[in-house]
Length: 137
Image 1 (tube, rainbow, N blue to C red):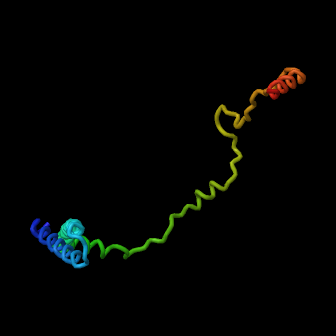
Image 2 (cartoon, helix red, strand yellow):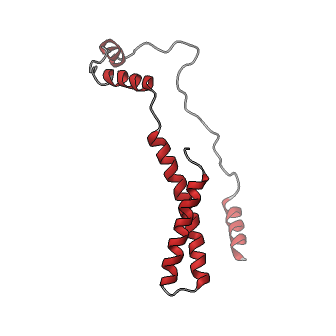
């Protein structure tokens, strides 16, 4: 960044003095005015950094070659629009044709799952007794 810390300090001191004067004119206590002035100094000091950074960015000369490269790219961008789609009608017709050939391989195809049945072989009277026993508390 251009400049040095002297610019930031001068900017901060200006903020400190202005804030101290305006705060004292409003019949504030000196200590309150001083605290506000110190906070103002920090804010104005930081603002000076931002201003110096913006000034450096704004005043930096652009490289002529970069500008020419961008200009050449911009000249080609957006000059041609391709709205054609490739011909895929043969592939679509193949997908729409029904396939009657059985699948090749040792698999016979889909077989449903037959899980073993969970059937109780106990007497219903015995099960009723167990339920009654658990619900008695």
